[in-house]
Length: 272
Image (cartoon, rainbow, N blue to C red; front, side, top):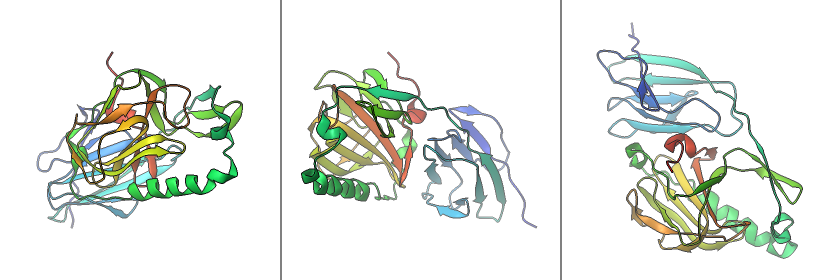
């Protein structure tokens, strides 16, 4: 009979349970927008809702939940020796604010027909860059804030531009002067580097491995190219006021493949 083993849970650095033989850790929270970074013994297989998750040779893995995820998820871990653990977790719901923003240029609230093809091409390029799935678990070393400044927008908030309801905000906004350095929050490989997308202006996407990526919007300058490898803290450009903005800021977004996750769950409050 297969023997069950127990997880060693690490939630934001706090250990809540332990077992003697194997060490399986989870860092993060099962919450809307949450990101879970895990570690298992080498050779272990991990499944989320019966779908296999990529596990590195060292045993690192990651997954995340979108803004409106709900219900429960099943996480199963299968050790090389046949030991199996299956756990179910409820995804905690969040309350999202409504953010009303005035003074947005009308061409960004109701874009003219002649830019429709450009907007479509931009969206296709961004979506393609986020499908990248490098084997190296560059996310495992942890994350830092990519810029310093005032938090002016948060993940999940419902945006209303000039009185017109728009899609929710899927990033965290850091307001700071134009030219403020933007650096890699964790190691990664550049999969998109564009100086002028319609909505997001200067835009860079950095793949941290296993489908987890960071996107940096509204940049004043882009100083990297597709294929560049960046260590944590390496500069990738400067903060700006390009695209659909009312002032200079960085919009930092994160994805786990198509799931839009909350960057702030990885770094916590910014230290001023």
